[in-house]
Image (cartoon, rainbow, N blue to C red; front, side, top):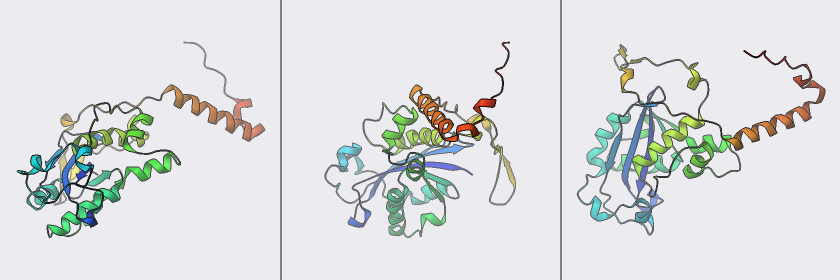
Length: 241
């Protein structure tokens, strides 16, 4: 499935209070690699920023004054995301705002056109009881976000793409995943996929602290298993080459 890493910036924290979307940033992944086919738009909100919101994003009403409204770019946005899986951090926030914009534009529900995966829910399942903000995950997973001074739709989507790959690294990353060399079009015919557009795949390396935690967990498992642990019958070490 074609995946779209998506992030929005808004004039405040609640669409129910009249806040609006001012920026949408999307990064396309094909076969779990960035394709370079990104989507990025600023929008005029026709409302004020809540206190602090402009400082977080670095945006202003003056900057957005000549930008299109959401209803002017909605068809372009839908053509880009239709049928894709959206990967969003704290998806309920972004989807709440986007569904509101869709209603205001008279376009129905976005959730009927796309699948949605929430990386915050994924992170909470993998790291229960820990901070799972985007910045915290970058630090934990070794993703460089040193260039993130302000929140920005496209920048945060690019960072989230690296975080998502790190969160879901597994068999697909070492060649066991089924390749999607061909994609089915809406008419049901197969279209060859041009792999030359793919950018280099991010490399994820375990840190020293992660390796230490892994060894500590193995030690606990050995102690708990007692004689049932295979360690006493471990295979012989390989001969030197």
